[in-house]
Amino acid sequence: MKKPLIVFLLALSLPLQAADIVLGAAQIERLGIREAAPVATRQAAAAPWSARVVASADGEWVVTAPAAGVVVRVPVVEGQQVAANAVLAELRSAALPEQGAALSQARAAAELAHGNRERDRALHAEGLIAERRVRESENAAAQADAALAAAQSRLRLMGVSAADATAGRVQVRASEAATVLERMVVSGQRVSEADPLLRLADARRLMLELNLTVGQAETVREGDLLVVEGSGEQARVTQIGWGTSDSTQTVRVRAVLPPAKSALRPGLWVKARRNVPASGAWIVPATAVSHHEGKTWVFARTAQGFRPVEVQALSQESGRATVTGTLDAGAPVAVSGVAALKAVWLGGEAK
Image (tube, rainbow, N blue to C red; front, side):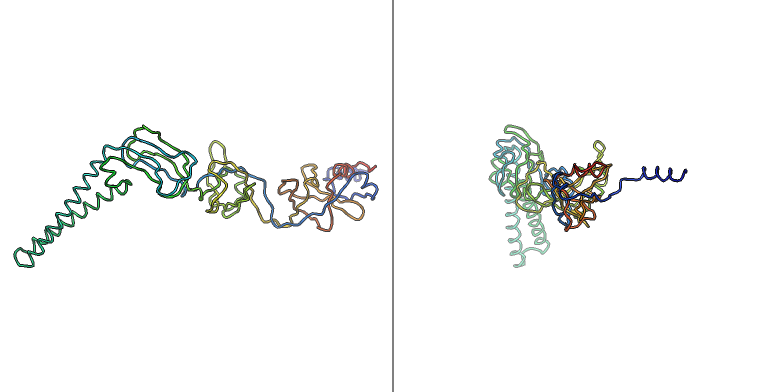
């Protein structure tokens, strides 16, 4: 007598079995059940992640003051597109005239040394001076040339012409086409050499930054493609952080957008999805998906009615869901009247 009782108790503890639901055409009509065929897919879009658009590491730079002075004007604003060689800022510097004078002196010294060298070469050819004297003049000319080159390089690195140096004026120009991200000085402000003036970025070189949980980051691989919702642009994952943030316990993931003109702008927050290969994946209307006891189900059509099929949900968006499971394109799934169908399955009766 104890054995049947044990079997009965074990049966109660077993999970719900996906037994067929027998329904006639009239009952299906009364329950308002409609059907749609699942569509097979080899790619599944994962749940969207928040991402911030930023300039690429090699596509952002800071423009600094080439000399100490006072900012006269900053003729650009944040967000402005500037062409290569465009004036970004103008300064007045009391130190520049000295640089201009040093260049003039170096040029005069080089001319004098060249003249002495040519004269000594001619005298040596006539046998009037010793060879040692020629070598000394040649060495002096070489030293004068080196001093002149250093003075010219100093002004060239500062982006200042000889005339501007003499006038004490500095025009800071863009080295290439870029977008102004931040103005860091205002007119009338005094700056020291190498102080930051503006922050620029190449709008064609952008990337996405994502802060993912450790579990989410473990599903990402370098080379994965992320699709930006709305624009459809794709970014390729190039870096997955090794450590986690102390405050948020998240991992920083970076994905580079292709180098082209984009509708995205640095600082913009977007949603990005990761497309992953999926074996046995199906796209069904979102209304076909039902949940019970922590599991996901759809109801597939059979000759006698419907059969509950357990599936794994991969993603859900825009009224459709991507699932994996033993479905068949030839066996439609219920997309309306699912609640009534679920009630029948769980022990109710079709009216």
